[in-house]
Image 1 (cartoon, rainbow, N blue to C red):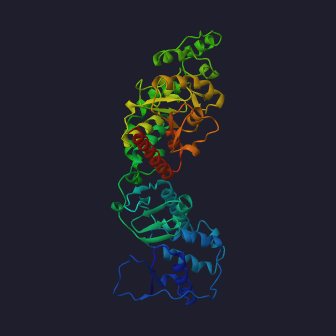
Image 2 (image 1 turned 135 degrees about the horizontal axis):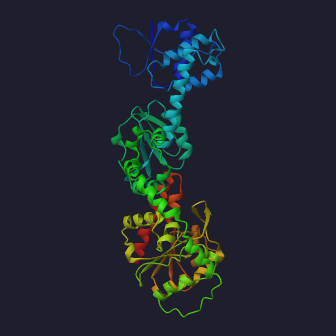
Image 3 (image 1 turned 90 degrees about the horizontal axis):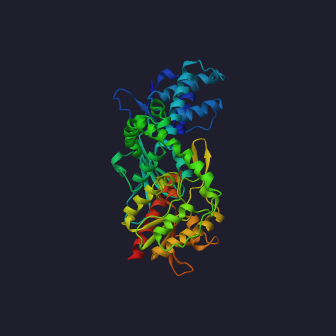
Length: 478
């Protein structure tokens, strides 16, 4: 009996070197005991070190075996090395063995390869990076994951390609991967306590998860199949799932009650009648008069489909005025600006930056919701410059009556409305500029931009920039 101890849990090249040596020595599979680094030493078993890989060809195997063996060696089954060597031994006499799916050894390897691939997919899907505080000022991210199999080395290159520009670490119980922006290195495994329990992006991510949860499509068994419960303890959004499931029926009933935000038919009939109505010109002498007058606005066609105009909100003489793009679905129904998912992100960021939304005047460049119907849904459409210019009348009135010391443009549409279509957001973001009437303007992104970003790490960085912009606004106000 020959005992072969491998130094790594899942190093295919190391196993292949040992397997070649055994084949050269004509050692049959049932006379080999494979040991990995975690196997206790047995005083009665003499172990052989892995000898140098021979250059001599010891046989040819199908490419399928190589591909499956590279994946199968990552399985946590202690018998994986023996299974691979048994198949390698048999392939020396039967080149077509890998095509026989009914063969017990081939079937066993097939199932292990599938399990490894599923585990690798889970690692890609359920890793949640968290910001790591660092006195050096460098931004770093770390994530904790508990794979069923030894898949970290196979998946780490995926994260290198996905997050090339950031420094990150993925810690698992058996090994850790580190990327410094140039080199990928592996080290010993770690513990969950090695990774921060939460970071500033957690609340925004939970808000986003809750906002996209659709109770009408809830299938608990399927959800648990796609997102197994064992991963929940490391997913920040998972703590919301039980309450979302418990409240799904009530939320679905409420959603049906709201009819997915399609305006009531009486509104549609009224809107049709109003098309030909003549709206008398009246002199607007106050902010409240402007708020009343905007309901009769016919300056562009957007009023025809929107439920109502959404005027600005806040103190009549606020020091700062935030200008967004246009009301969304929920704002259109509520008649209030920034009350939907983007508004929640805005409120959370304001709180984190130490600013009080109640002391700010919040409005939009365009006052009517622009959308296209899709079944019972209304999908947001970006207003064109003609609509932005038409609505500038109302924004100018708000500026005239509020007289803010500082105007904050949230997003490209607000920048174009305030500074002209030739000014881009990228050219003025984070800068204090001056409008033609001398009013100071500060530009940053719209909160909905943070919600649309699919890359969570990138969204975390952008949110940090957004909060930093809000802090700068607070500093400018003194």
